[in-house]
Each structure stands twice: as C-alpha cells, then as structure tokens.
Amino acid sequence: MKAFIKTLFGDASNIAGVALIVAVAAGLTGLGHPAWAVFAMPAAGLGVVAWLARH
Image 1 (cartoon, rainbow, N blue to C red):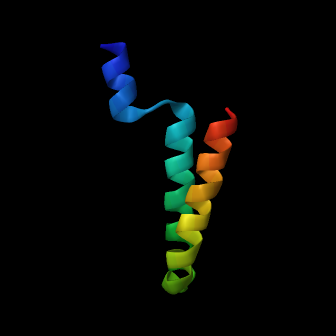
Image 2 (image 1 turned 180 degrees about the vertical axis):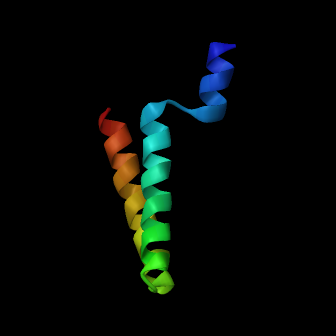
C-alpha cells in the first residue's frame, strides 16, 4: 500500500517541484504576464527534473 500511495502522490521532493512550477505560472499570471508563463513553466520543469535527478 505504501508504494501505491507514493506512486499516486509522489514524495516530498516531487510535490515541492510541482508546487514550484505552479507558483511560477501563478506568479507570472498574477503579475500580468501570462505569455511569459508559457516559456517559464517548461524551463522551471526542466530545472525541477534536473534537481530531482540529483537527489
């Protein structure tokens, strides 16, 4: 059951990474630059993937 829960929700690092990507999108959209979020989210996603790969 523990492996199933971890697969569904990930661990703390995965959740933090997703939260960071969502924060980038929300922050840029809130500042009035939604077009920038289109480019910043994939860059943030690649950064998160690189960070997770090093963990």
